[in-house]
Amino acid sequence: MTTIELEFAQHPSTSPRTPEQREAILASPGFGNHFTDHTTVVDYAVDASGAGGWGNARLEAYGPIALDPAAAVLHYGQEIFEGMKAYRHADNSMWTFRPEANAARLNRSAARLALPQLPESIFLESLRQLVSADKEWVPTRDGESLYLRPFMIATEAFLGVRPAREVSFRVIASPAANYFGGELAPVSIWLSRNYARAGRGGTGAAKCGGNYAASLAAQLEAEAHDCKQVLFLDQFNDNAVEELGGMNVFFVFKDGTLVTPSLTGTILEGITRSSIIQLAKDRGLTVQERKITLDEWREGVSAGDITEVFACGTAAVITPIGQLKDGDDVIGAPDSRAGEVTMSIREQLLGIQTGVSEDVHGWLTRLV
Ligand SMILES: *Cc1c(COP(=O)(O)O)cnc(C)c1O
Image (tube, rainbow, N blue to C red; front, side):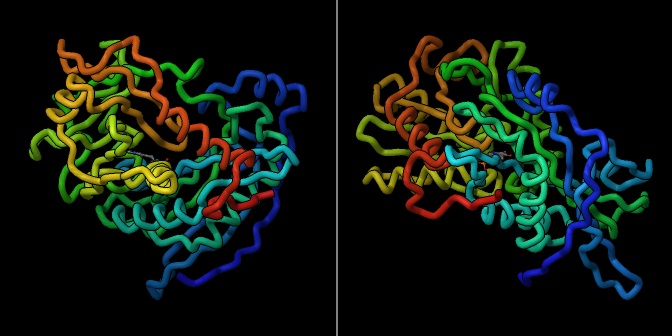
């Protein structure tokens, strides 16, 4: 892809939060509740000759988006997004983790949702511009970060069904504490028997809002059974384990082998997942990307062969899974403790991201 440099017009907020207001929010940010003072925006349009291009790049005040009620995103869900974080290091420099992987994945999602390709250079500059304007919002406390949410929406006002010819790419930012809140206790997961997240040829490998909309009914079932997240299976493939609504899964075997479901086209290719595979290999552990079925999980836990199970993704990093509830059936135990391998890989990954461990793979990019 060609490198395109766009000049970002500067329209800073005329009413940013006061330092006191910001500090009050940063005292207890939660996850996804509060947003910084700015946003970056880049627009795409197809001209009369049929050629498309990105332009009108700008930094502006965070606020409501004016959209025509006929905008395609509101009707046909032509939308994709990314999730990443900015970390403040001890010297106050600010970094993000493997942003080129997010840029590449955004473009794979864009191709699937018939949205335009966004040059990596524009993606990165949008992050840089936003984090420089809102650097005071990057939390300073351990385990906290500034969650970055790049997204692309079809803005064209047209109800005919075809890919929109007007699109916007935006980035917003939200200070984030631990995703699930509180201590790192193993979570209970609900097995979805009534709903699938993705099907062959569908959008499971794309990071799009529609996948999340489709997962919410299952999420409600989970909550009704005191579970935090939903596990989806491929019921047409021997109940192969796929992933959670927004996180990939790993199994740790007693001989130290890590197993994670292979990327079949219905699983989202997590950047945390691929980083864990690399870190585990660096430790000399065997990592298998393969099919793992519900039966293997059940039997592996009861025989003591599977010793730890965890979920991973940018928002929650690595979260131990205590038990899987399948109706009245349960795999694992509610009072299980976070496993050693889970915790040690989590520490290492967080250490790299926050600048306290060596970044041997060059995964960090400085933003500010
Ligand atoms: C974003 C996401 C993940 C995790 O991806 P990361 O790049 O590790 O944050 C996993 N599954 C789904 C469905 C996702 O949307």
